[in-house]
Structures are given as structure tokens and as C-alpha cells.
Amino acid sequence: MQKVYLDTNVILDFLGEREGFYLPMARLLTLADEKKIEVFVSAISIATTYYILSKYENARAALEKTRKFKMLCRISVLDDEVLERAINAGFSDFEDAIQYCSAVATKCNTIITRNEKDFKKSQIAIMDAEKFLKFFGG
View (cartoon, rainbow, N blue to C red):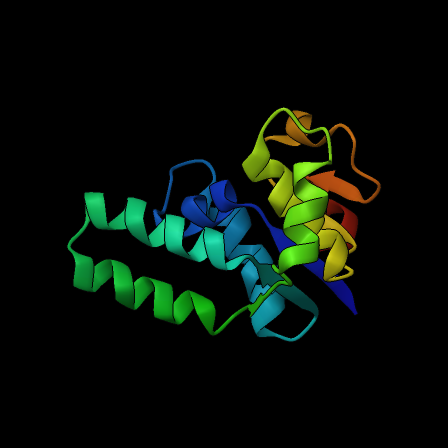
């Protein structure tokens, strides 16, 4: 089964219902709901997404969205080894390094992000939700 890792920005696209970005993410997450793909996210992304959503919505609504979203995905590996690899990964953005190293440790095939350029050193596929849906046939 295809193991897909979601970067924080695309989680925000979905939960924040960002115009122009929400629908591809909704279609991608429908594939997860149908058990056609397996979706992973980092605990950091969950916390960051909740924090940002709670600034635009009330905390209860943000927490409820987070709870429902979590039912569609699994938490990726984020331990001492992942952090050590991220520190030494040579990425210009440390958060992206953590995301990448977490995805690799979790054995994901693809990272879904809108910031593909931030993952130039990637050894796994990097694409946005629309490209993934075309690739996957969704």
C-alpha cells in the first residue's frame, strides 16, 4: 500500500479549507478513508495545525477538526534518531528536515507538500496533492 506523508502546509490546506487547495487534499484524504493509501503525519504537524487553526476559529472547533483528521492518519516516527538525522540533514529549514527524516523513518513513498523546492535533497517522491492524485489515478 502507498504510504503518504503530509507536510504541515497541506494539513492546513485541508483543515483550514483553503481556497484552491482544499479539494485536492479532500480527494487525497478520501483515498485514505477508503483504505487505498496510508497517510502519516508528524505529531509536530498536528500540534502546529491545531495552534494555527485555533487562532482563526475557536479552540473547541479547532480541536474537533484535529480529532476527526487524526482518524484518517497515523503518527510518523519522531524519536531521537529522527531528530539527530534532521539536525545533520543539511536542509535550510529545520522543520522540513524533521518532516523529511520522519517520513523516511516511517518508510513513506511520497511526501505531499506545496513547498516541493524545500525538499531538494529528498530520496523519496515529493509532490503536491494534485500531482499525487494524477499519479495515483484519484
